[in-house]
Amino acid sequence: MRLKKFLPKRNPWSHKGQYGSVLIVAGSEKYTGSPIFNGLAALRSGSDLATLIGHSRAMEAATSTSPDLITIPLCGELKPSDTKNILSIQKDYDILIIGGGLARSKDTYEAIRKLIKGTKLPIVIDAEAIRAVGKSPIDLLKNKKAILTPHEDEFFALTGERVSCHMDTRKKKVKKWAKKLGVTILLKGHIDIISDGITVHENRTGSVYMTKGGFGDILSGICGSFLATGISPYEAAKAAAYICGKAGEEASKRYGPGVLASDAITFIPIAG
Image 1: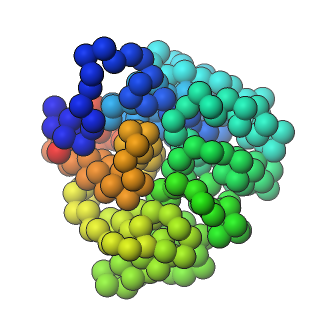
Image 2 (image 1 turned 180 degrees about the horizontal axis):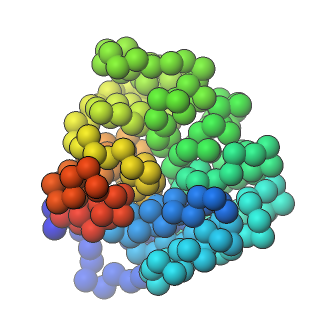
């Protein structure tokens, strides 16, 4: 398993939860797949436990998909009144992943901001959580150990700046905003750009067929799993982008344009 080279060596007396307990706030009535992809990707990339919190319909879908996923259903979409209970259990986890498939609403965005501001955990911020953070990114991300995983439109929502396909421009903007916000940014694309505001890295793994919904959720899950090991957000993001891209490549060799994000999950352990 080539994945091992990215992970810490295990003590023979290791126990459950020692190598990553991941908390995932994701999913909605409409988008039920995101937390499943987050959780299974985290588990396949080395984490021991994945707990999902989200709309009851999304949690029902998760329990039906895999018995490996722990679920905590919410009554309706994520809202501000849910945040107190979620923050009260963060001590039991190593990492928070937030954003995939959440509702695009005022209440959910407010809840996202409260969770990000209140959490003490390292955090992977994706999808709707990036858009929610874009309202006041400097304040919310101050002193956070965080990875943000935007595509181009989410990068615009976060920063107010568009990015072109010109590589030098993309690298400069990602580096600038990573430094300004004090986080690691992984800008997804044909070539992923990762920066911690000091160094910039290009990831060139992946396939043109990875345009199906769910691949970004897999990337976030892998980012969270690696970040839970204690390595820096920058190193976690670099490794996750590489592994996600390689898993997608392998799945695409088998399925071509018909490849699904779920096909890539089983290729994560042998990617690399």
